[in-house]
Image 1 (spheres, rainbow, N blue to C red):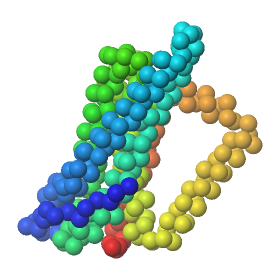
Image 2 (image 1 turned 90 degrees about the vertical axis):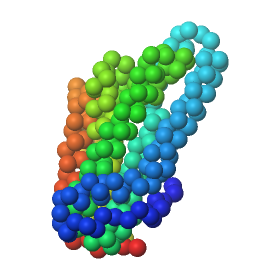
Image 3 (image 1 turned 180 degrees about the vertical axis):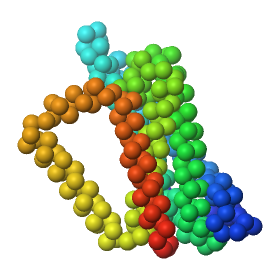
Length: 263
């Protein structure tokens, strides 16, 4: 994955340190590199879509039995083809702290204004990316899966085929916001404690996930977990993710107040 270029546009310096009026200019600082912020994720998404269209066409050509073809197309509702664009959103969140934070502090921007400006940028980008994905979902549904019965934007994780336009946008928006803030808070841990912080964080995360899986297994609770996801639905699960998003925003703010930029 390529890295963000050093911003060449000067950061605002006219306002005194700690001024809230600097939040919007700082948010704009995050989108100076338009190729990396706007063009690259669009290219990733379109490339994945084209690859999937070829795969769907091959399925349509090779599976001639109507029952087998229906089974194959039914399995596409679980497709995770759009997964990589969300991974890229995590990278953007991490780069916001890893690359823009040192530059912003070098221009006498306060840590509070930097984090609030970053949050504003994340909200704006999540809305933009969410709208982009929603448009693709509408096209996919209107064309019967791009003419091949394929599904990439109308999968069950994003409300399935019956989701309204409002629901689709809300699910995409919340998912992108989650990725931006999680990426940012992980990068903030690095800014605060560097390699040792990363080792402790990922070790703790691994133990937490492993302990949770072990607890569920030992208590034979996997059916109950599956039932919870089925009852909660895609909208409910994404709504729960907002708690993690909010926690990441708060933790990131607390950590970055004591962080020193790393080159």
